Length: 184
Ligand SMILES: *[C@@H]1O[C@H](CO)[C@@H](O)[C@H](O)[C@H]1NC(C)=O
Ligand SMILES: *[C@@H]1O[C@H](CO)[C@@H](O)[C@H](O)[C@H]1NC(C)=O
View 1 (cartoon, rainbow, N blue to C red):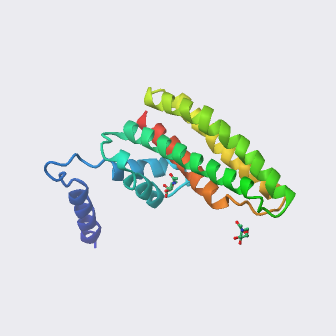
View 2 (view 1 turned 180 degrees about the vertical axis):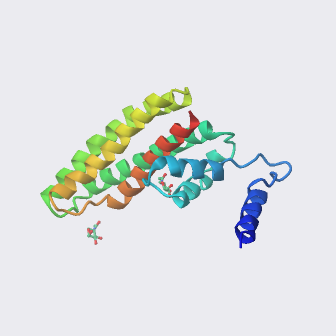
């Protein structure tokens, strides 16, 4: 029976080709997330892309993949800034058990300071300026900083107090990289 797959294909075509609601700009997010997820090679999934970009007010005016790449860079910056603040609060609380954890947090704090004040502004300028190759390289350094933060704890076999934040941060950096790739 070849009719069922044909019907499915036909319906998929009709739905994906549905015209945008009058008066609203076409929503580029679903298309971008499909393409970005494929480009991301398993570093994040489509649901993460959709919830991240749809949850951001800045995506509303985005006309194309290039705009969304800048949105993702900004979300990554906001996220790492919040993680840096959490680390500061933890270190200030004097309520961390174990010198290794304190040292690990200090090492993450140094990495994230560079990410917030040096890498991310450079990445944003590159992506915003259409220099996607530079942007991807720069965002790669952000992703490496996140991996280095977690590696510190893994190597010493102590739990990272920012493990959950780092999972999200890594996915955001990779989402920004993937969007910069398809914006090309
Ligand atoms: C960090 O990113 C996640 C995923 O998009 C989001 O749920 C969270 O609200 C963000 N946090 C900040 C502080 O931007
Ligand atoms: C100290 O840390 C423990 C374990 O993480 C937590 O349950 C407790 O609420 C913290 N105390 C303060 C004063 O932050």
